[in-house]
Structures are given as C-alpha cells and as structure tokens.
Length: 97
Image (tube, rainbow, N blue to C red):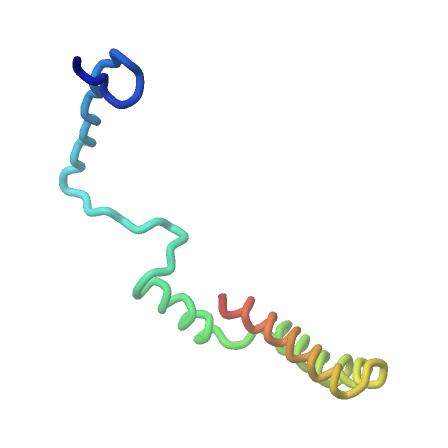
C-alpha cells in the first residue's frame, strides 16, 4: 500500500515556481524612503548645514523661560523637572528620528 502525498489524497505534485526574468544592465536601486549608508548621513548633515530652525529655537526658549516656571509653581520643582525631562526627551527623539 502506498502513502498519499502530504495534503490532499491524490493531489498532483506542485509545479516549481517560475523564476523571475533577470533585468539586464540595471543594478538594484534602494527605495526612495530608505536611510541607508551615505544617503542617511547626508540628510542630517544637510539639515545641520542649513542652520537651526528658528521656530524650534523660539519654542525651546519659550518653554524654558515661561512655561517651566509656571509648571514649577503649579506642580512643584521636582515634578516640573521630571515633566520637562519627559517632554524634552520626546522632542529630542522626534527631532533626531
């Protein structure tokens, strides 16, 4: 008695997958959104060369000079520092992502 192949009894064997045709003369190019190698390094260098975003600088100065003392008066010094560290860490992470 012979065993049936795995799967359905009496099923025909699978055909091998068709190979993809080779693209002649073209090397594989990275996707547009990828940040690999020199392309990723040039991105942050070009942003650094353009200078600071003055809106970002104004928001940081506003947060430190105006909002932080208000939060310290409402929540207390320790909680104001903890909250500033959390918000600042989130902002730094988003800016460097």
